[in-house]
Length: 274
Image (cartoon, rainbow, N blue to C red):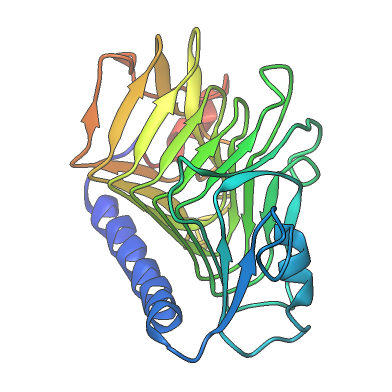
C-alpha cells in the first residue's frame, strides 16, 4: 500500500472532477429558467410520485428541470434514465424527505435510486434500502458523469452506495453501512461527509474497483468524519489497482490499527494505492 506523490495526483484528479461537476451544478442551481415540477403525495403538486415526475421529463432533455419533493416517505424505486440529463431532485430537509425501498440481490438490480443520466443533482434527501444485513442491498447507484449530492443521507447495510462510473461530488452527506458500503469505480470527491460503519467485526467502508493503471478513477475523502458502532477497516481492494485517499479527516477509534485489508490476496498490495 503506497503513499507519497501519487496522493497529489489523485487529489488533483478529485479536484478536477469536482470542478467539472461543480460548474454543471452551479449552472443548474442558478439558472432561473429551469422547469419546476412539484411532487406531493397529498395531491397538491404536479405529481404524487417521484418517478412520475421523472417520467414526465422528455427523452433527450436539454432543459434544466428542478423537481421539488415535498416532505414525506416515498416508497418507490426511482430511476433517472440515461436520456434525461439536467435534472435536480430536491427535498427541503433530508430528515423529512425519504425515498425508501427494501430489496436485495444484484448490485445493479437492488438500488432504491439509480442515476443513469449525466448532469444530475440531489439535495436534502434520505435515500435508503431497508432490506437489512442479509445480502447486497444498494440504496443509491450512480452510473453517470457529472453527478452531485448535497446534504443527503444514504442508508443501507451492504453496498449502500454503488459509486459506479463517472465523476461525482458528495458534500455534507451522511453515508451508513457495514460491508463495502461505498463501492465502485467512479472518480469521486467526498467533502465534509459523515461516514458511519455499522460493522460488528471487520467490515470494510470502501471497495474501490479500479482495474488498470490507465483509469483516472478513485475515491478521495476530504475533511470527513468517520465513526462506527464497533470496528471497521477503511477499505479493501475490489479491483487490482484500487485507489482511495482519506485526507484531513477525523477517524474515531472504530478504525482498526491496520487500516486496510487486501481481500485475502497479498499480490494486490503491489498495485493498490491507499
